[in-house]
Every structure is written in structure tokens, then in C-alpha cells.
Image 1 (tube, helix red, strand yellow):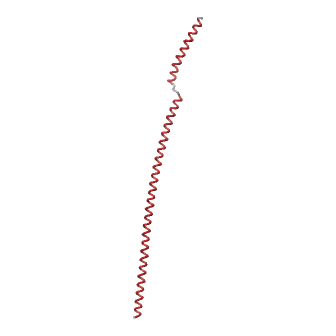
Image 2 (cartoon, rainbow, N blue to C red):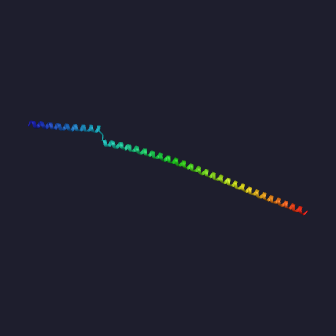
Image 3 (spheres, rainbow, N blue to C red):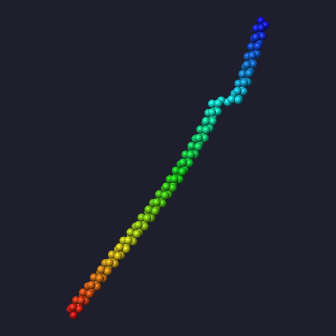
Length: 133
């Protein structure tokens, strides 16, 4: 019987030691090794945020470049329109000058023709007068 009592006491001591040992070791293990999935998840979350910020910045940059490009195109278009307007205005001015010149030449020719006819008439009259006299 002695032996049975001793065995029971040893068993109780072993169980108590195991419980204490397990509690302390569990605490140490938990302190040393945080949950790996939680760490990975938090790192991925952070990485996702950084990537999203990067993409947003890239998109804003592209939009600004597009706006600048559109402004430059609009300015170039306006300049081309202005040049076209000035060129058309110059062409109209040249056409007017050309018409005026042609009109003046035509008048001059008509005037010359009239003077020539007038002189011819006078000469004929003189000849007729001479013949009559």
C-alpha cells in the first residue's frame, strides 16, 4: 500500500508541474511567436494601401499631362485659326487691290480710246474743212 500512496503523490506532483510548465511555456511561445497569418495580412494590407496610393498618384499625373496636352493643342488650334484668318484677310485685300488696278487700267484704256476717237474725229473734221475750202 505504501507503494500506491507514493505513486499517487508522484502523479499529482507531475500533473501540477505539467500544468505550471505548460502555462509558462505557452506564455513564452505566444510572446515569441505572434500569429504569422496576422503579420502577413497586416503587411499585405499596408502594401495594398501603398500600391493604391501609387496608382492614384500615377493617374493624377496622367490626367495633368493630358490636360496640359489638350491646352497646348487648343492653343495651337487657335493660333492656326488666327493665321488662317489673317491669311484670308490678306488675300481679300490683295484681291481688292487687283480689282481696283484692273478697273483703273480699264478706265485708262477707255479714256485713251475716247481721246483717240476724239482726235480722229477732229482730224477728219479738219480734213473735211480743208477739202471744203
